[in-house]
Length: 144
View 1 (tube, one colour):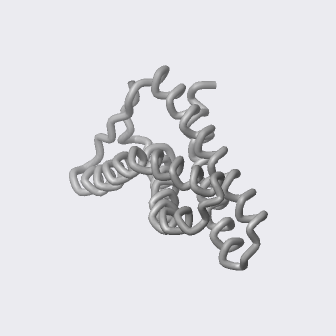
View 2 (cartoon, helix red, strand yellow; view 1 turned 60 degrees about the vertical axis):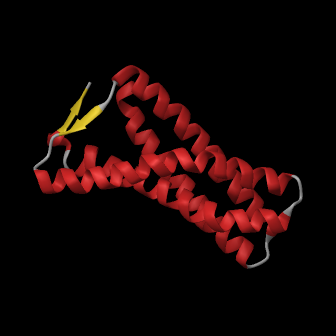
């Protein structure tokens, strides 16, 4: 069960990414209700991801990527940017959501211009990290 969580996490990050893209398309068309539903979908997928991620790492520990230096450097750049922005995105998402709930749409839109691309990046790089560790180069992933 625990060993399947990285795949579940990648699926949840992919869903978040898709909901974010679709939500942006809907708001661009002025379809506010569909935008709201898509963004709630992205939020739910992200919360489920975070929960699953924490459960996995509490039980499986960290994974070290012992690849050749160039590949490891690329991975570490992606991982570092992903991790730092994942920390930043949580309060940004909450503040953006709060402004929408409070019907402060001008303030919501101003903040969403920053939140959306960062959230999209975090979701996409989460999937990329999964692909590197579990699909493309699993021989270099040392768990535990």
